[in-house]
Image (cartoon, rainbow, N blue to C red; front, side, top):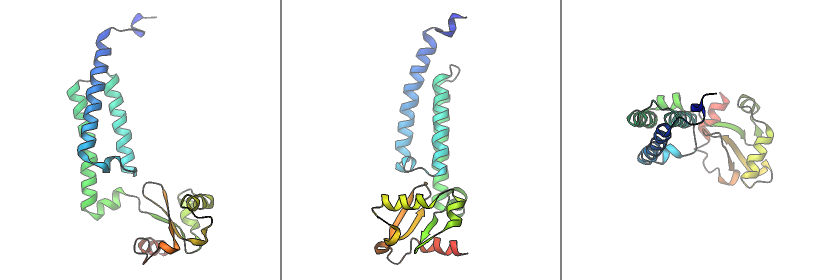
Length: 176
């Protein structure tokens, strides 16, 4: 067995240390500059960016043939793409439709929406668990349960439905 397998000298170790520190600091600065949206509950777009950033960062730290400038450019590119897509999403509805999963109605006005539950691989137990997390002992006082874009379940009590303006678009979409 080759001795380089265990220790290949100090140069690769210094390279990893320097790139790790610089890469980490660059990521912190980039994420700080792009704002809290980058670190909020993750939508599918955010998840893809997080995985890609982690993969790129991991690769740059462990690869000896990657320069500091190349690592910074790679990380800045990925954060820049995420920022650009978030900006386009905020500006145009067609980009929101292309990039976001719309909220899905799972329970409304005493009725489970079985088609939606099946489509999103959820069960009645998941709806009851959401109600319990929302402080409800049963679905009797629950007006709606919605699957949000980030995968969490939101519970709206009957006493909190108000005019229903944040729920009605999804009810109408569901009934079509």
